[in-house]
Length: 286
Length: 320
Image 1 (cartoon, rainbow over the protein chains, first blue to last red):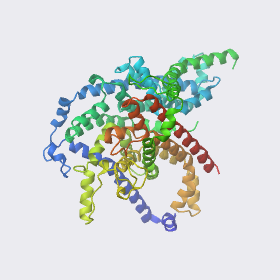
Image 2: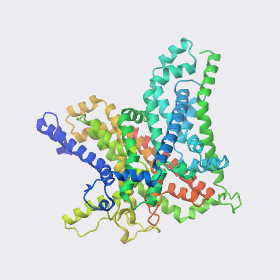
Image 3: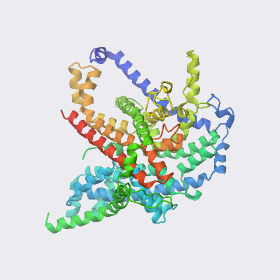
Image 4: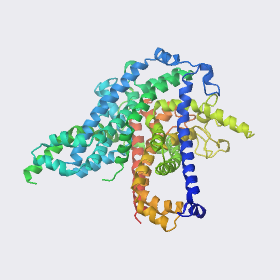
């Protein structure tokens, strides 16, 4: 510890030591980045290999087989899975953002008796394990004959305590003078919400939209217990089936995995600055 | 504000809250009470078992259910990765907070596994861990051979071995069970996924909020790098660390379902079955809704108690 302390003490460290520290940080970062990337790289390379080459140590295919990707579509209704996942996730995202923004507005910008108690109740529900409410929700869906339907997959997921929390935090940071000015001009709460708050909360709305889309695009448990028919299967369930039926064809499995992951990577690279802000916002006290 | 204005605002708030609140009542609060009630019954989705209120019978059975305790221990075992992942996130954040070049690229790469986390990623890791053709063992075998170590690479997802030598079906230590097995494989994967994820971003945000005057003052006083971290940065990070620890515990108690369903089916010999996967199998494979509800309420109670302990202990030790 002592030695370490001396090492960078200002005035003693000098150029060499600063360079050394800089270099060490970069080496460490590079090692971490490689560790993160290698599994994805292996996946990509394996997806182009002939089957017998997957088992070989050489990570590069000697014969590139892009037709692996076409064969995935021939063996399983992959396009259908894609459509279902995107369709369901898009609907859930739209509804979650809408209901969360409205509730967040009520919690952050309007004054009403009992507001903080109700908000605490919302927060407390974040502690409830998903499985506790999942069993009753499943039985309700049975009674409503919503098993194996888009409605049953979308509606229960459309309300989010987390989303409400996130957007409330975001809306708290918007100066109150703005809605007060609008209120003096005679704007109704709905107008203020729509014309003042929503545009200013855009980064938060986008962050929640990404979280929500992601979570539902990848969601496994609820679609797994709720759907039976092939035509309603989502990507995660399709992948799971594909893996258990064609598990020996690792090259095809990897091609499917790549196709599952690529849209996410693109989405992530395009939206990451909103996402980072959203996550960091969620932990702000308030 | 005048009284009518107040009332007007309350009405507006009700309107804004209504869609979300109705959803909250129907899909969260209602089911919560419903499942508590059901946990005192023998309700089963199998047609031939008549419904009966059974009082606390499910809970009594649970206390004697050896499987439950084994899976409880599994769930705790899986938490071994938690301190490593949190410390790793902090190290990553400290590295990224130095404003070096290419930070956004690193941050993007580090976060990627968290972002794409799901069935596809787990199928990928299942292949990576494959003892016969997976690249992990290919590298390990090569390394062991190079170093002339006469050991074999672990069997990963196929093995019940673990760091404490726990027997898979008895809560006892067995000498032959020491090593790395399925649980450890899942833990390593979990660390790989989480290290550059949300916790790193939270630490990064907290680090930019540490007042620069504090660290500079300490450096002028001759404090070394470690001393500055230990006595200035770390205490400033305490609220973030607290938040992360609380959330990690909650996540860890609820976790393990996807890994078990996708990668191991809870095996080998039930070693990767966590409480959430146990509840799933009881409810949706054996259709014992009443019993599964009782387990899920016990899980809820455990999470609640642990969170309260964290809260008390955490706020005490950080408010000194």
